[in-house]
Length: 197
Image (tube, rainbow, N blue to C red; front, side):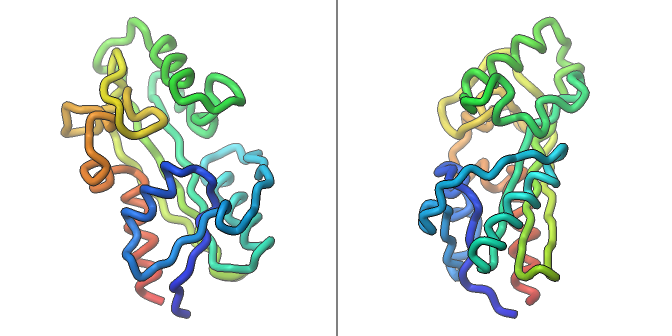
């Protein structure tokens, strides 16, 4: 089965831009906005994997087109994996990036450098048919800094430094972040799988 057009189950312009930069040009990617789908998909899963599957399944069942969805989260070891599946709405239902990372920094006050370990996790669920559903995981480890740095990116990018780097994601240009990000790792696995079809 050859696939050239994919629906990416998101309205998030930042995520869509990242996917356009990560996927080879031979794939045409449609967003939920392109499909005029504006309903809220309730993210009721208890895990990142479940929410990714839920979003992709909802859109596949609605449109019957090859579809993938990403769910991502920041997992902080000292906070027992929080914010995790609640990353986007950590500070409340408004999904305010700044409020989310401010709450995180507040909760981590007083923690030593060694206690600031964290990882970004991305799970992509691809629906090609009801019988062909695959998940791809990307993880990047790093640390939470004590104060935000940088004005690029989105989400928790200003407070996360990836392992082996001394700058936050928000201090990196998009092409640099996209080479190493959790989403890039998951998308790379997605592309490898699509190329094998």
